[in-house]
Amino acid sequence: MKPYNGNLLQKIKEFKLERNAIILAHNYQREEIQQVADFVGDSLELSRKAADSDAEVIVFCGVRFMAEVAAILAPEKTVLLPDHHAGCSLAAMVSVADLRQKKKEHPRAAVVAYVNSPAAVKAECDICVTSSNAVAVVNSLAAEEIIFVPDKNLGSYVAKQTGKKVILWDGYCATHHCVTREDVANARRADPRALVMVHPECRPEVVAAADYSLSTGQMFKLARETENETIIVGTETGVLPRLRQENPEKNFLPLSPKMVCPDMKLVTLIKLLLALVKMRTPVEVPAEISRPARRALERMLAVV
Ligand code: 13P
Image (cartoon, rainbow, N blue to C red; front, side, top):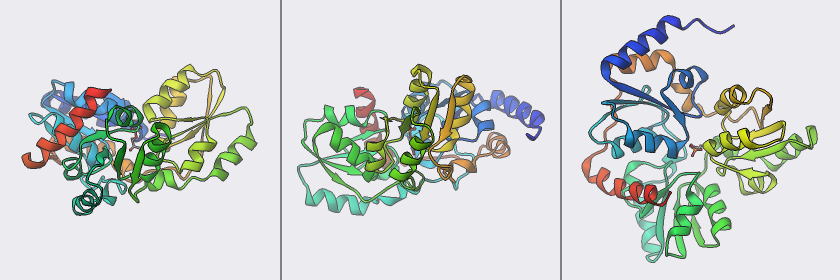
């Protein structure tokens, strides 16, 4: 049985109007958060929305690096993260000091930061990428040698797709790295006609065993367009309710029920309401970091 949230939803709507706020939610958020959001999308779609919105307040239902991107691209707006503990273990795997050392070792390499990184790391990079545009952005660079931080799996995928020399960082997303080739083999055995789509944060052998490697936004598009009736979904399970709702005639199964991001699940309806009522927790990026980080993000947005 689902809890009754009527009053809570009403209050969220009232305070949203009062604050002239917009609620942005990532595709991995809880179902009830996605339902109350003004816009739900992947990292790239959300950063564009943050930059374009004319609301005064952005309540970012996601994790810290995403709220930081919104604050960097919309410095005149107040960006709120409903739970200030919502971080990203992958983003925490790269530090400015270690990256500076790597840059010294490879002075000719272009430095590419996956958006799943701290703002201070983006400030050290030439350009940012998301999972949906990483290949196109790296292809757009003149450099043949690339330092790619922090996700080694997405970095490997980019290396394979672009043919460039990619210096990998030893970072990974625990939620995606936990699935194996065996999980794909088991899913195919259960239904040999099923289509398998995975996120490029999965291990290279999982990506190789799948039919498609896609960002979450691209998964929604493929789900609409494919004629396959059963689709195995290799990313955080938060995408499943909306995939099912948008495509009631199709059958969506998780590649593994273990694919749950604990940070993404920290945001709840009550925390969302409290964020609006108490204007918490503001995410601010100091100007000396924000300026160079914005340059790296805007270079990315100019490519795709
Ligand atoms: P998307 O680019 O699909 O939003 O991926 C975000 C992410 O953090 C994956 O773990």
